[in-house]
Image (cartoon, rainbow, N blue to C red):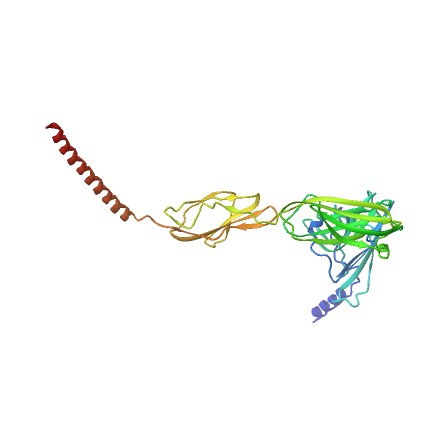
Length: 390
């Protein structure tokens, strides 16, 4: 009885340990949080990442301060790592975090607390132009990174001038897409207070398409701002395309300033063609059959599926060996370097055993025919020889 009472007292003491004493170990603080490609989520109900400075779609000059706040709910107040990246580069840890733990009231379980972390740091000198800064919250382990939340801000650096500037964010220059449509995403900046109208359009392979226009009453919406535009471009053919975005801005109704930006990109939305397949819909008298074919483009993966038994990866032409007698089917697949998949039709063929009885019978008939022909020729030549000797 005394032993049971002691255990109850120990459990009660453990449950009443203060938050500071019962902190769950945090992940190790590391120089970098790893590449952003490992991001698995842009947020959840219990995590919030805020960037106070810089402000989205704003132009800056000189030194820039990054001010952030991260709120995360964790068991006993556990808290992960915070980091930032500029223009999609390396994610660097933010180490000078000031943390505070809120009261647990209102959270889903008894031992879940919200931690609020704040930081302020000077960013490295950035070149004039458009930039993106992303702040991440997550866990870092030696071989695995799972970021649970992040937020991104777009801004620009540099002195304003009258010529409008355009930065095309997507599609990227010299990129290749496997879709017949793409999202044209770009930023416009450097529209000064004296602007009286503006028009934005793009040119695709020499043909112009309007995006937006701003009259004297509307132009104030883009003055002294970094303005994002998004335009879907559909029905793209395979091949190389030339894309230019233009901004024409009038000052005092007649003073025209023009800006533009151009890129090239490729479209490859077609599946690879597999032609001249060596196996056709016919009967074969051998259990070893050559499998060969031609491809019209580079591939990242080739395989065949025999009798629906699963894909077998290929490096090129091969020979199917040990095929059983009877009916078979085969399909050949190929993925190009962008992931477009091509395949052949389902080809049915048969492996048939040679009937040696029929072969022997046919051979016997052939021998009889040959002997008969030979005897006939012999009789003919004898008669001919007698006539010539008379």
